[in-house]
Image 1 (cartoon, rainbow, N blue to C red):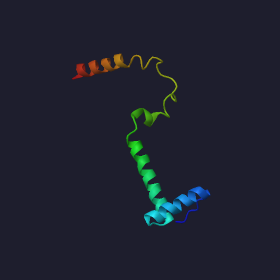
Image 2: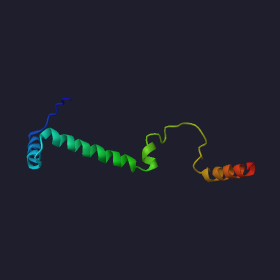
Image 3: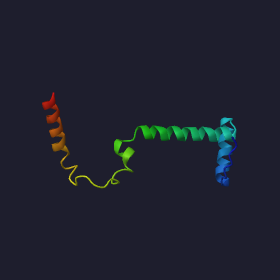
Image 4: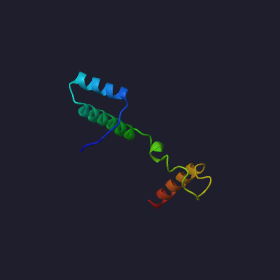
Length: 87
């Protein structure tokens, strides 16, 4: 599928030089560069910490207890105690 990309003269010369040096066409060189960039982005997504995955959601919810994070330990302890009583 054809795609047109406008490049400044400096970038064009760089691509020509790299393609010639590697014995590849400019199109092959650009496809390879995009592939490398996509793989790096995928690796970065896989190594993101949990917060980074949901950072756009933090602070987006209204309501609920205002001390939820302060009381998390107590709530978790009670939840475990309730489960152990039921077992």
